Image 1 (cartoon, helix red, strand yellow):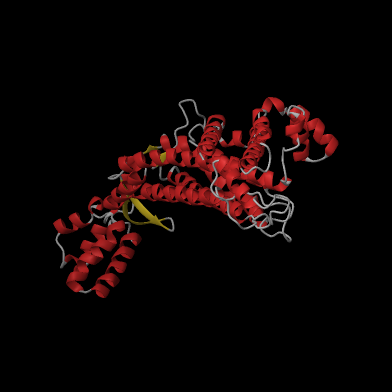
Image 2 (image 1 turned 135 degrees about the horizontal axis):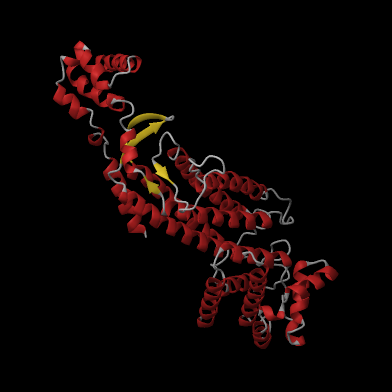
Length: 452
């Protein structure tokens, strides 16, 4: 058991040190090293159960290095044998003692090895993506705390609805980002149970009577969890769930990108993406400050879900095994998600919030954004339905005559009889009508910080 833990720790540290980003995880050399690590884990498990000699497992492990598996040699061998895994085994065997080589890939089948390699790649990818989301969480925490009292218009269907704070808005981004972290953590648990060694049709044939224990030990050697007992090769639902989770994450950032694009509109000017002092918005229109990051997030939110559909379709397979069709898509969706998060980081870290502009925009409807509040005040005096009908008339009158809500209300006899000018001035202060927006955001911040 001590030996298993040591090997697991060694492999885990090797992965962390080698994979700086998701692109690295899917590079040929990284995949080839994982292939060798999987074969070593198999050999060591079999040696522990006396299925193969211990000395053979040690010899195999001693040669589990990329210096014995060059890409050039693999390409040449694959041209001859037309089989990706056999080509690698043939090249690797040239460096392994002939007697030990007899026990390399002992009783295993190609699909088990490559699927376990893919499981390791997805596992390592999830670790890296969670790190990215945690970094973004830090930026969103700062953005929310810094804007707890940044007053702005809450909009529904593109129209001013009621006052809120920008911190309340970004707290929804913060909470959604945390849910995405938790979604990935949930998938991570399933991925870690998906290492597989079940033979050609998933019944452990060819692996001997100790096959289930061999599989278990092999996965522990790879720092994976005890594997699921079912044969999932023809199902691939865990990979599909992973892809769909990335699809959800992309939509979260697409929504942020869309909102920041709108908030940066000339007519609003409430936020601004930092692009550096020498950035040029347009070659012919120097006044433009075109957002770039927000648009890129929107684009990724369109691309990533389309890729996930292909991975989802790969759940429909024939009988016990079908040719894997979505490995390339899993690579592409993983790399694309990391690229999206790399675009989101500087956007959210350096986002300029035009607090004064947000406050100014609260007043562009001349107080009409507070009409609900005035309705509630009058309801206590003349009844809810009467007040509601009356304020619809007052609001319409204000719009048709280009008046402020205060002016239109005070011109209405029924309103003016039930409210003083001092009272209406207090009522029409948007900074005092944000509900529990600040407390709401503070509670989200507290919850997130407790989870970090």
